[in-house]
Length: 97
Image (cartoon, rainbow, N blue to C red):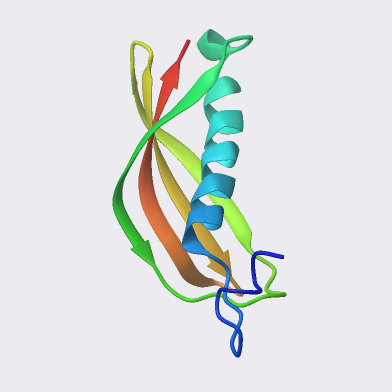
Protein backbone atom coordinates (compact mmCIF):
# COMPACT_ATOMS: atom_id res chain seq x y z
CA UNK A 1 0.00 0.00 0.00
CA UNK A 2 2.83 2.46 0.78
CA UNK A 3 4.17 2.04 -2.76
CA UNK A 4 1.07 3.73 -4.23
CA UNK A 5 2.42 7.25 -3.74
CA UNK A 6 6.14 6.47 -3.63
CA UNK A 7 6.42 6.79 -6.80
CA UNK A 8 3.49 5.87 -9.06
CA UNK A 9 5.47 4.98 -12.22
CA UNK A 10 8.52 3.54 -10.46
CA UNK A 11 7.72 2.17 -6.99
CA UNK A 12 10.67 2.34 -4.57
CA UNK A 13 10.89 1.24 -0.96
CA UNK A 14 10.64 4.27 1.35
CA UNK A 15 13.98 4.63 3.12
CA UNK A 16 12.30 5.26 6.46
CA UNK A 17 10.77 1.76 6.35
CA UNK A 18 14.17 0.22 5.67
CA UNK A 19 15.61 2.14 8.64
CA UNK A 20 12.73 0.86 10.80
CA UNK A 21 13.50 -2.71 9.76
CA UNK A 22 17.21 -2.20 10.53
CA UNK A 23 16.32 -0.72 13.94
CA UNK A 24 14.23 -3.79 14.76
CA UNK A 25 17.11 -6.00 13.64
CA UNK A 26 19.44 -3.99 15.90
CA UNK A 27 17.07 -4.30 18.85
CA UNK A 28 17.23 -8.08 18.50
CA UNK A 29 21.04 -7.90 18.24
CA UNK A 30 21.55 -5.74 21.33
CA UNK A 31 19.02 -7.67 23.41
CA UNK A 32 20.88 -10.89 22.60
CA UNK A 33 23.89 -9.65 24.61
CA UNK A 34 23.92 -11.50 27.95
CA UNK A 35 23.87 -8.33 30.08
CA UNK A 36 20.96 -6.85 28.07
CA UNK A 37 18.60 -9.85 28.02
CA UNK A 38 15.06 -9.43 29.30
CA UNK A 39 15.28 -5.65 28.96
CA UNK A 40 13.64 -3.30 26.47
CA UNK A 41 15.45 -1.64 23.56
CA UNK A 42 14.41 1.85 22.48
CA UNK A 43 15.47 3.43 19.21
CA UNK A 44 17.59 6.45 20.13
CA UNK A 45 18.87 7.93 16.88
CA UNK A 46 20.35 7.73 13.40
CA UNK A 47 23.75 9.01 12.29
CA UNK A 48 25.80 8.79 9.09
CA UNK A 49 22.81 7.55 7.08
CA UNK A 50 23.11 7.03 3.33
CA UNK A 51 20.30 5.79 1.07
CA UNK A 52 20.31 4.24 -2.40
CA UNK A 53 17.26 3.13 -4.34
CA UNK A 54 15.64 -0.26 -3.90
CA UNK A 55 12.47 -1.22 -5.68
CA UNK A 56 9.22 -2.95 -4.84
CA UNK A 57 9.77 -6.71 -4.83
CA UNK A 58 13.49 -6.59 -3.96
CA UNK A 59 14.70 -9.11 -1.41
CA UNK A 60 16.49 -6.98 1.20
CA UNK A 61 19.15 -8.41 3.52
CA UNK A 62 19.20 -6.64 6.91
CA UNK A 63 22.27 -6.65 9.16
CA UNK A 64 22.89 -4.65 12.30
CA UNK A 65 26.10 -5.33 14.21
CA UNK A 66 26.49 -3.85 17.69
CA UNK A 67 29.86 -2.09 17.60
CA UNK A 68 29.86 -0.26 20.94
CA UNK A 69 28.06 -0.30 24.28
CA UNK A 70 28.45 1.92 27.29
CA UNK A 71 25.99 1.61 30.14
CA UNK A 72 22.45 1.67 28.77
CA UNK A 73 23.52 2.94 25.32
CA UNK A 74 24.45 0.82 22.32
CA UNK A 75 25.61 1.75 18.83
CA UNK A 76 24.93 -0.48 15.85
CA UNK A 77 26.37 -0.48 12.36
CA UNK A 78 23.34 -1.15 10.13
CA UNK A 79 23.42 -2.24 6.49
CA UNK A 80 20.57 -3.15 4.15
CA UNK A 81 21.57 -4.70 0.84
CA UNK A 82 19.98 -6.14 -2.29
CA UNK A 83 22.01 -8.74 -4.18
CA UNK A 84 25.17 -7.50 -2.44
CA UNK A 85 24.54 -3.82 -3.28
CA UNK A 86 24.17 -1.58 -0.23
CA UNK A 87 20.86 0.33 -0.30
CA UNK A 88 21.02 1.79 3.24
CA UNK A 89 23.95 2.25 5.59
CA UNK A 90 23.62 3.96 8.96
CA UNK A 91 24.84 4.10 12.53
CA UNK A 92 21.93 3.48 14.90
CA UNK A 93 21.76 4.30 18.60
CA UNK A 94 19.78 2.17 21.04
CA UNK A 95 18.81 2.91 24.62
CA UNK A 96 18.23 0.00 26.97
CA UNK A 97 15.63 0.29 29.72
